[in-house]
Amino acid sequence: MNSKTTVLIYGCIAALIAALALRECLSAQPPSEPNGAALFAANCGACHGSDGRSGERAPNIATRREVVSLSDADLIRIVQNGIAGNGMPAFGYMGQVKVDAIVHHLRRLQGIGVAIAVPGDPRLGESLFFGKAECSNCHMVNGRGGYRAEELSGYGRGRSVEDVRASIIDPDRKLDRSAQHVTVVRRDGQTFAGFIRNQDNFSLVLQTEDGAFLLFARDRIARIEYSGHSSMPRDYESQLSSKELDDLVSYLMKTGAVEKKTVKGDDE
Image 1: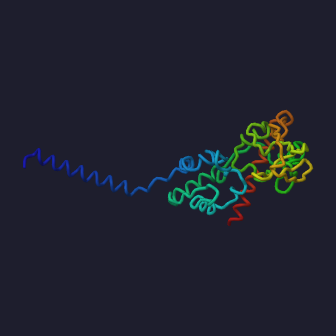
Image 2 (image 1 turned 60 degrees about the horizontal axis):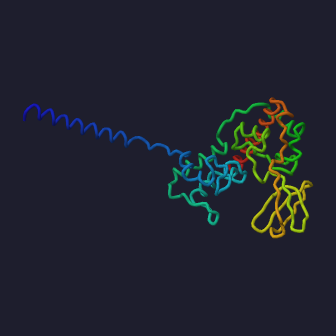
């Protein structure tokens, strides 16, 4: 055997040993963690929205209290098994690891497990909420306040400081029809003003300014006139100082943190 052949043989053996060693090394490394954000975008975003706050075919799951208050185990079961008759498909075929990653990302969208630096003093914000700003005339927090508008217990959960501040100074920015003042005109010409609290194909429930609830059959309604504006005042930016707005935002963000702590305690 000449020297060139010997060198070639030894070179092949060395290459084979190196390849085997590399394969052994790669097989010993733990598999990379699945990307929860990418999985959520690919499987959930089309219906629930990329931020979880509702899309074209499914509801908000990032800030709705009844969803946020569910335990991780409940959310995992829903993702795995779907919801029969509700259009929610089952994703159990993806495997436990990927389902867990989706739920973990959803929790981040809900603001759970994410530390958020907030401006202002929540104690001063609470005084503003129930005092000068008169938020409590319409909104309730933890059993205190009015009932004419959305309850804000846990409102800050899943929302950024910027979103909360914008909802105060520019309430029409992301206008939800349920937040608009409406006028229901019946076929007999009578009109009723208030806020729609529930509706389906057959009926509509209206809450009037004095707190009364009225039920209307759909076939008795001539039309519904939407105001085109939120029921929120649109002058808070001029009525409150920048520092007061920071304090109010801080209080609303704190209500989310308080409720989160309560829910965790319930699970435990």
